[in-house]
Length: 531
Image 1 (cartoon, rainbow, N blue to C red):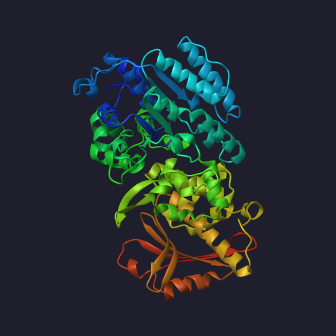
Image 2 (image 1 turned 90 degrees about the vertical axis):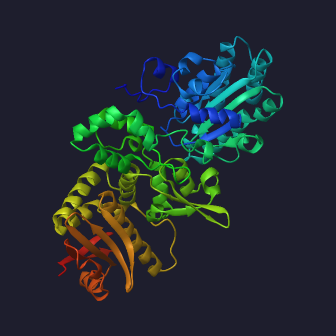
Image 3 (image 1 turned 180 degrees about the horizontal axis):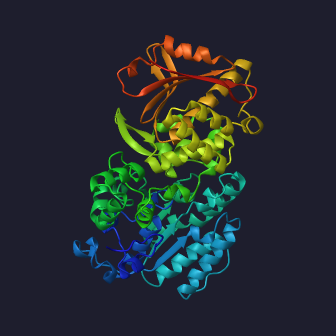
């Protein structure tokens, strides 16, 4: 059983230390034969840096490192040596405000590595001189750029700083077109999380292939089901023993928790970071999500008044997936590019693709529901975690008193913290907004509990606010604002919402919850066992 390379990004070290490496050189060989200038966006912790490390040793002519891999054994690749320059914007630290100085210093360091000097002039001139001087002394340059957009993404909550760094990146990438026309570039590969407009690398470099949803990259990063079972066989066996599950049941659980990322709607991928840490800990946890809680994203969803339920499935065109601007941040596109949404399926209408997005797996969905619930209710993490567990216990035990008690705790600070994102013209509009807000909170809470939940369920006689189903109970919930709980129960009965469940063995509860518009909390509630 090979040791796992969790946190390791140096390809040569992984091979030499005989750590587990999933051979992606077949896909890499296809890239080399189909072009030479590429951009790839993928979520954080998805293997982008390791991929660039593979390119680095490939173009450095280190054939011995690849001798057991596909590209050396099954192809005629020549392993010709070229000068390689690599910029990793993640190395510059978090929230860099002096990007121009940091980049200039990095160019100077790289010039010294190649035993040359570059005059301290403009950023674009320094960069062009570095590449040009190296290329004219020998072969054209291989240029690898990792996490190019980090100086922008770090400042999404501070647009002016983000725009300033965007302009600096525009200067830095400006010479690429000229270097290409002069024949000074052998290969260019750029990675990032997002594809921002108004960066010259996308607008000026006409022959740059965007791999983000391209057929050449569908399984370039990530782990397919076949790769998981072939490469992690001994780890799977050990995990199945630890959980006292059959191999088939363990694989099904892993698929539910960690599989589901897709860039063509067909090939489903595991995030390498989550899989490596799962096999290190033998514990189902939120490994990838916990490395970068999307505080900005969930607050923006809340403050813009976006209904989180739309992200269960939302349809978009290709433009939403591949590019967006700082001036008009599209939340759906941002969630996709950062890995919180993925392509579930693709439909073609008049030969035009429509992409349907949703959460990739349980890890992402459950953690997203928790963070959205925390943002929407302004509740501390400790209070929310405790109350959610108690509420789940209440539903699983048929104890609505416990459920409501802790719902009131979660909502206790809402009145003093949140104001509507816009001015409402009438009292009725404001009333409806708050009614929808409470619906959203209940949906987030019950969705996080990992039970079957359906919100605003259409019925022949109306629309039921929420259905929550546990192992032994089904709850049909109707919500009111400044109303009467008995009216909510009566409405469930009059519209026969419970009829579809009459042959189920589970106990069905009819639940009416009345929220106070003034107190922003539960005013009264009533639950009745349906017979």
